[in-house]
Length: 261
Ligand SMILES: NC(=O)c1ccc[n+]([C@@H]2O[C@H](COP(=O)([O-])OP(=O)(O)OC[C@H]3O[C@@H](n4cnc5c(N)ncnc54)[C@H](O)[C@@H]3O)[C@@H](O)[C@H]2O)c1
Image (cartoon, rainbow, N blue to C red):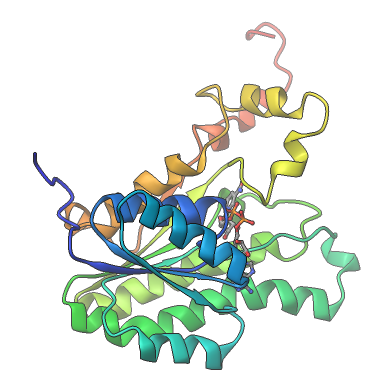
């Protein structure tokens, strides 16, 4: 059987790996022979993902690590000897219009979604450089280019992640490290599950996406796994939009009598 991606024997660090997208990424990487270091903020989340990987025959280690805690990140980076792939997926969303946001709320969200990604990238850069095949993949969002209202600093954080990744691509390219973002549209995960439980929201969300459905975490995991591999060796500084065409629907919200309305 061909191992098209050629990832077998590599080592990854994945943040938010107890959540919907992060867990799917860890599982997909492990299926491809990658040893996964699973990071999340709570031990039950970490343990569940490690157990799932091991149950499917993969190899994993777990670390409880809050991505806002610089000392905790540095301690994990010291214990993990090798890292070829860093995936930043830990994130959160909080409600609130920007004009009503407190400084604490602003800083709290950016602390996880943007500074957390930066701290991880900085701490694991030496490992990725030493790898000779280093790849960072940061989970951003289509909200980096389309303001997501009433979500506090969420869009701001994702826009920051996209430009941070591009800067890392520029700075680390000469050292053999690639950096890319994946920007999902609507994905059904623990973060968003509450919306799908309300009335016909699930059906309406599916109908809003040109391919006819919102994404599953696996849809994003496959893309991240490709970007982690040498098959993506000439891709760096890219933002790969994975939204089933949702961001192409802007014009359909404008009434145009005589044009299909
Ligand atoms: N679900 C979507 O529709 C969607 C769309 C676009 C982008 N995203 C992004 O994808 C990523 C994963 O989101 P998800 O939908 O899987 O959400 P999720 O809530 O299922 O998973 C996020 C994980 O991050 C962890 N986390 C949060 N704060 C942390 C911290 N301080 N330290 C360590 N871990 C922390 C959580 O415990 C959780 O397990 C996030 O960056 C999110 O912004 C999600």
